[in-house]
Structures are given as structure tokens and as C-alpha cells.
Length: 254
Ligand code: SAH
Image 1 (cartoon, helix red, strand yellow):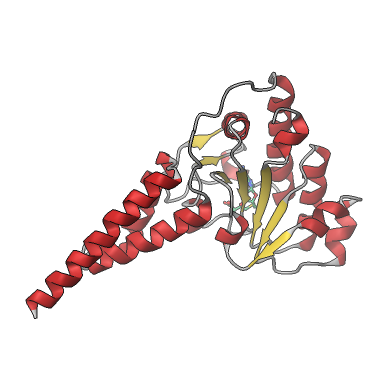
Image 2 (cartoon, helix red, strand yellow):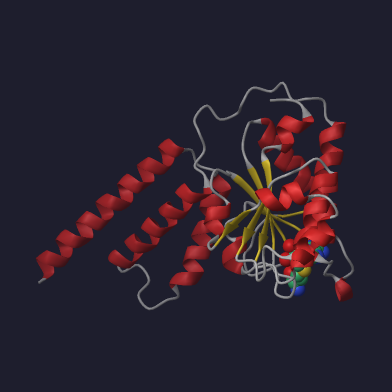
């Protein structure tokens, strides 16, 4: 796992709720020029579409292989490191990286054999908080404050270019994998968050406060931890016991 092509195959560009099929085509072209091929589309407004193919300018292989999903988590299956591209800081308090720093961290993850996802939002509304909450860091392209939003496919191009630049600059990584056990992927993390949310309800943790805010905070905490599958199993076990105790207490109280 050390040629540029091997590394590039670990990356996927995830376009979320894209409005204009032309942007999907331009994004396919942008990633193809930098040696990437994998695109995942989450709830695209129009796809497939002739406009996408016209703007792909020959990168039809990328479009034809693109996965189309109804849920973001399905576009993230298998990935253990995700960066969310956003022009604006959102409510989610993620570490904010420059495109270069993002590329370096993403490449370091890929050099350990991890699959990496780059998330891009809708043209008008960008990535929502709950979408950014699935990321490990946010990347902001340092545009000017009063006109900060790039065209979607141009943001894709900047990120793909940075990744390629870092890839070409680095000697192939000989480093042994840092994780000796498989990391939990996005789908496993999603199941954990569902279990955690359910357990917090069962133990009446919220007491009228917003469940959404606390869940976003907890997601941030656990995303930072990058847990492996064994650690996740332990946490599921703790939650299951808490649920069992809550049920017993409920019965006792009646
Ligand atoms: N008003 C939206 C802009 C959406 S542009 C917002 O504030 O996010 C469509 C997508 O392009 C964004 O969701 C983001 O993924 C990417 N993008 C555009 N400009 C960017 C920038 N300056 N930094 C990082 N990503 C950017």
C-alpha cells in the first residue's frame, strides 16, 4: 500500500444533496484529474443527468461508478476518517483545518490503511450540523469573509489538488499501521450513536433539555476518539447494561 494509485483508491468524495447535475459532472472531472475515482452521491436532486455527463468532459467512468444513496451514512460505509468541507463555521465545534492540513491528516490516515471520506454540502445551504457531526475535522478554504463560498466543484478541485500535492511530495509511507485492530467505520459509529441516544432516553438523562444538542456534543467527543471495534463493543455492553438496569428500576417503581 504505497503507490499514489493505491493511496488514492482509499479516498471517496461524498457530495451531499447536490442541486445542480452540472456540478456533479464538474466534480467528477476535478477528482479524475488528480488521480481519484470514487464519488458517492447522497440524495442528489437530479442524477443521472445529461448535464452531469456534459460537464464531466470524459470523466464518465467516475459518474458511472458513483454510488447514489438516500442516507449519508450509506455513502460513508467502510470509512474511518472524514473531513467536512465548509465555508462557514457551524454550530458543531470541530477542529478547523486548512486544505493542506486536512490533506496531510487524510493522507496519514490513508497511509495506515484507513478509508477516507471528503464531504461537500449543498450549493446553497452547505453541510448541515448533523452532517458535519459525522466528520473528524472541518476544512475551510481560506476565502475572503464577505464572499466566502466557492462553487461546489471548485471546492472539490482545491481539496483534490491539495491531496495530490501532499501525496506527490511525501515519500511512500513505510510506517507500520498505528492501529492493530480495525477501527469502527461510519456505519458502526452510527449504530453506536443510535444505541447511546436510546439509552439516554431510557435512563431519563435529558429531563426536558434538548437531546439534539447533547447528542452533537457526544458525537464530537466520540469522533475525536477514533475507536476500534473492540472498544465500541465494550461501550455497547455498558449501554445495554444501563438499559437493563433502567428497565428493572422502572418495573420496581410500579
Ligand atoms: N453557503 C454555503 C456554501 C455552499 S457551497 C456554506 O456556507 O457552506 C457548496 C459546498 O462547497 C460547501 O458545502 C462546501 O462543501 C464547499 N465549499 C464552498 N466554499 C468553501 C470554502 N471556502 N471552504 C470549504 N468548503 C467550501
